[in-house]
Image 1 (tube, rainbow, N blue to C red):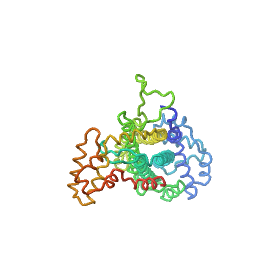
Image 2: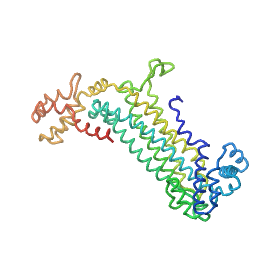
Image 3: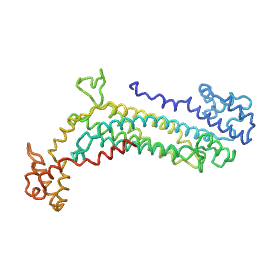
Image 4: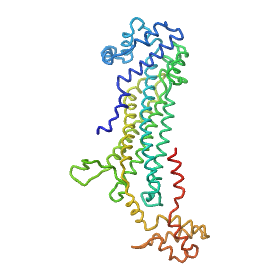
Amino acid sequence: MILRYTRKEMGSIFSPDARFKFMLDVERAVAEAQGELKIIPIQAAEDILKKSKFSVGRIQKLEEKTRHDVIAFVSNVAESVGPNGKFVHYGLTSSDVLDTALNLQIVSAHRILSKSIQALKKAFKEKIREHKKTLCAGRTHGIHAEPTTFGLKLAGFYAELKRNEDRLETAVAAASVVKLSGAVGTYSSLGSEVEKKVAEKLNFMTETVATQVIPRDRHAEVILSLALLGAGLERFAIELRHLQRTEVSEVEEGFAKGQKGSSAMPHKKNPISAENITGIARLLRSYAQPALENVALWHERDISHSSVERVILPDAFILADYAIARMTDLLKGLVVNKKRMLENMALSKGQLFSSQLLLALVKKGLSREDAYKHVQSLSHSLKNGENLESKALKHKVIKKYLKQTEIKKAFSGNLEAVGKILESIVRS
């Protein structure tokens, strides 16, 4: 992997050290709340807050014997506190700590991902401004349809990115919950007042009704939002891959000095970043299935979700962050061939404006059926050197309904609304 694309900050959120740190944050918040409510001695709460720490190596050593990572963690933390270590994890079950800590991880990962999204949005807005008037062919089914601008083309992908940003924010907010209700969610060991206090300290909500675990629909929503984010990036990547084909050549990924495109063909400049992002999107989508399957756990809880989440949550956030960073670099360095865009528009011999000619005829009184028939017949009969405008200027029926200036106006494009759309986009 190229060094500039390594996402160390995001990866660190899911390291063993970070995982146990989040768990310790939960244990400390619980002890502090319990001290305030006089459930445990105030001195015990103070000792836990001041003295508690952990060693990943020590936890791993203890786990070799206990075969239980939370018990090994709690034992290690208790050792660090001293005599009052017996009040660490008081009244809790493992999933109280694990699930609340996991949600802290998710919130922290989202905070980093959000910064990456802001950088991509900025790159989009700069390119949109730069190319708001850059004419190019709009395509449907891969075939020339009507004129558009490259800025408007980019604006559609930018708007989708914003929607995915909003979806992810909503999903993470829904996952920002504390659960301290015990073995089967009945608060049998601790009253709900501890959970409420800890939620306030962590700036989280309390889980409405829990089993032994936080319901996994919350986590599935996060993964599904990341999958949708990846799908949006892939849609843009596919567009860029198409526009870079030799026969199209409207854009080109930046090519650094000394870069090589092929070991065999020295001329090659390939859409490697766009292709890489397409592959990442496939992985992100693949995580949606196990995330959904994690929702249906047996009775008050089984452990089948745990191994899945230890893989898909770190992977999904790290991959999404990587893909966004790579897309940001791609967009910043994107070479736009305005001349080729105009040349490609000319390939349609004016057919890009057929809809405008059709509407002009209808507006002047010709039936839509007849207008469509005449414009289609002209469009399909073009020969070498001919274009739709020149044929329309000579067509008896069209000349009967439209003046020469009106025909020419139909072939000037109708992009007045584009400027307004793009202006609202870049301001948002």
